[in-house]
Image: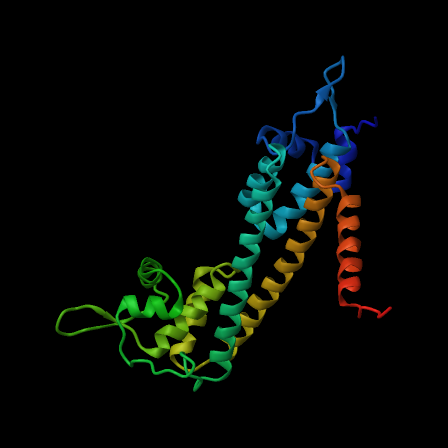
Length: 260
């Protein structure tokens, strides 16, 4: 069995050896054996864990990545893969929202609800349901000065217009990008005054960021599969055998029966 020095793995992944020790202390990488002099003896399995860890960080974040790798260590591959699938579905939803936001910015007259009518004044609950966010999120964005709903003169309740809905959708699209609050405030307020060019630009940048994260997620999943093969949770030969068996079995079923 080949053993790797910490510096060899660190150099491949462009990180420090102390980072390797941190990951080990988090419990996301199996503890290595030690030499008689106390040095860590990393194996091919450890290298696969570190490769997967580093690649998944960029697409899934630290929290999800750590949960997934802890599940792999316990042999619960199914739960790990479904957790990954859930994050990919969430990213798909982010993309849909960003595309909807861009459509609304490029076509201000586009209805917010396809084949439906929208009220000129909505409650916070109605606005939240329409934009797909929690009312508490809208209150937080109001507190941050990102949106300013009108108030019902009789009862003081918040009232939201179609312009507010566009603003909320834009905030939802931009909140996971690198834009600082001041920049976001300026962009969101521009929607209120029909100054849409900058909002379109940053929404396109947000979509680009989503596309980039999607590619990084797939690369992370690729290395997750490689890790599962390395630790024996996946047998690639069995997968290939089943694929070809299913193909030929279907071909035979689809073939016309010859008459004798």
